[in-house]
Image (cartoon, rainbow, N blue to C red; front, top):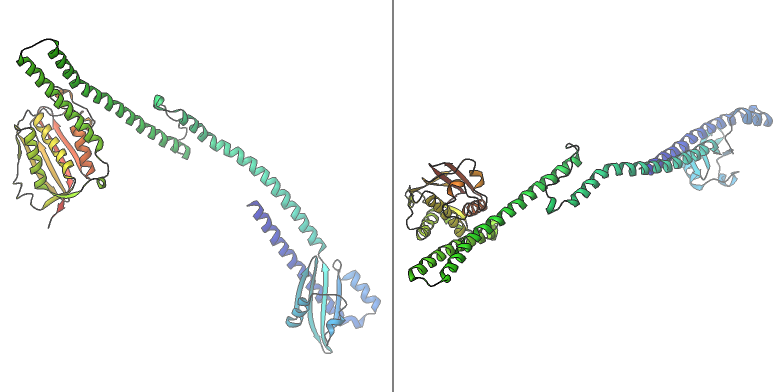
Length: 436
């Protein structure tokens, strides 16, 4: 930018100098023309004296007045560019510049014919000014570049040093000290915003690591419990000979705990394999009546004593209503809700309602069970979380997190309303398709 500025200043100054000297040359042409007209009134000596003392002759000036006749170019005393003479003849006025010399000419008419006045000189003052300007600009450019480089280096160090410090600090943060954070000096500037964004990222990572550790610890605990019972019963049965009835009781206990372990492993596998992208799964148009009927049928096989009841005519009220999604996953979600409602109400009656709200369908499942404390409702979506009032009831703590994940995968919502010892209402809200 400095170089471009310097070149621009020098270029426009040179143009101005040349134009200004052309004006001075044309003034000399005017004076020479007038003197030529009055020359008959002076002797040769007087004319030269006036010319040298009073006409402000330009440096290295040559002056020539010649009548334009055939072959007049060959009679010129000095050498001029051909383009300059051609322009003078065609336009009557002409200028030229060659190296340091500049010239101007004009044709004037007298009764005796046409005459050409040609003045050529060197603008010594202007050339010296331009040399001085060139020296000043080059010096200023060099000094300016040195100063700007020094200032840029100093300022860049000052600007980048906080970033370098934050990079150095960030490189020291690992799993062992994930709780540490970058210092934020000014939260309103870009560096402060960067530090805040990085700290928020660390917060999310810390939460993810904590959730992972909690998940592993809970999963290990839940898996260890049935394994401990199975091993204990097997050791007890093999310790000595026992009656057949005692062996049968041990085997029943082992089978029960093995079933529990199998259900836990299956739920864990389901939870880990559910995709976050519905496009990765088989998606179909599912009629709502078919979804609810088949879910109820499968749940009856799992819990024949359940009292889940539909509070509507499933064929009439749900006619032409359908959802888009994966049949198996949606059935898993609904069966989990049925299972929780029956399990935590000790198989008391469970009511299922369906409501159409604009572009969504709401499936409500209401039980008369133990309920959920208000403080525990936000935690039920965490894997393995179990409220204090249901710890003695069988379960893995994976059903609700799996259900929520499935519902969210289908662009739906999962809502819970509950009150201790009065029951719980779970709502599954899904986008609905209107069949024609």
